[in-house]
Image 1 (spheres, rainbow, N blue to C red):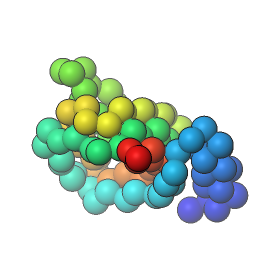
Image 2: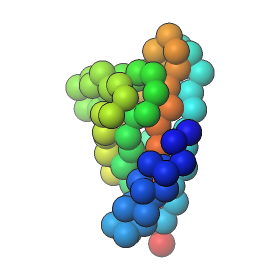
Image 3: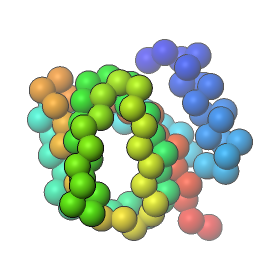
Length: 94
């Protein structure tokens, strides 16, 4: 992990009202069927590739690409042959 870049991402996210910032690592060829999260998410892919499907529209994402999801939005995730890593800021309800 590029600690300096992660810390900058975290600092910016916290300044925008997010309360949790983590790194997520996904194994190669992982697939997550339709699901939701109880938090808003704002993320940047740092390694690998993934496909994110929201409301029937699929986006192919690689290093440097960003995505955002509001809480409780149904979506699917699929990860590439090398898996993927992304940094995600979460805004939990409360």
